[in-house]
Length: 344
Ligand SMILES: [Zn+2]
Image (cartoon, rainbow, N blue to C red; front, side, top):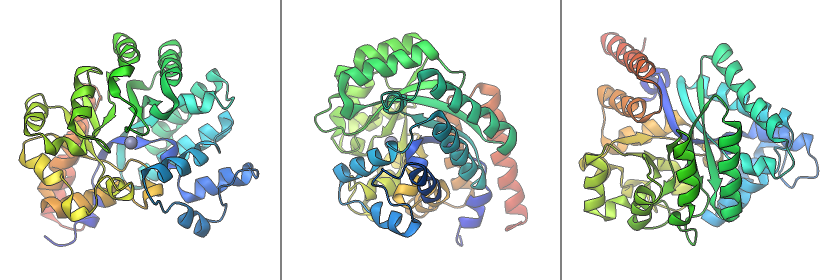
């Protein structure tokens, strides 16, 4: 097929792995940095592009945390959240599970209730004004240790904002063993939240097993190294445990050395439910549409194949059954119309 970009641009999509602060576009970051002139984050977009060029995963975490530091008031939180939804609407993203790290904000002094109110307010406004349905995944910043885990579980359980659907674990994997977080995941799961930890991005397949067994993961963030363990791939395929694949992110953080060697092909060949996501899109110079284009090229997909990829995300989402049906139908209708009159 020809360049699939215009098909992808109009395709209704769901995104399952995208970080709240990591979605701040240079424009939003510049705006926040201007509000907080003591920050070391540059305020002009060109200098920001340089600033966002990472040397390795540790450097990425460092830059990411400096942007986290710009979100200091409930008003910052609301602005960031709504503007992120605006960028999603421009890409025809209809539904997104946004990974939020409330610990990073509350420990910087944002009042808990103010934080929850800000994200919920932005969520409702995004749905009403932009047609983007947002849900939250509260994630533990792994680098901050067990105290952060305890606090994140407490914030999730005590506040339980209406949009909250899942519980996650992010940050570095090396030296941050998954099983130690079991009690916090147990608590969140007991409260009805879904388990979606990152695993197997910068470490081997054992981390994915740990996430499945200790944290009862229902989807895996990245899971890139799963392809090194055929038994694991089989298990993921058999239990329809989706992998949240973020191709450009994997290159930016050097989790994968070369996009041509990205393991997404092996995952699909093994029958694993693969979803395509953008992770921290502006920081990686990408967006969800670009990630779909990358995946379509690597997997040699035509329009129907790309639409199936979009439907994988709907299937693996935590939307209610009626919501899933509606979004899947929207994808089918769009695709059928496109194939009848390409480029419409
Ligand atoms: Zn992530």
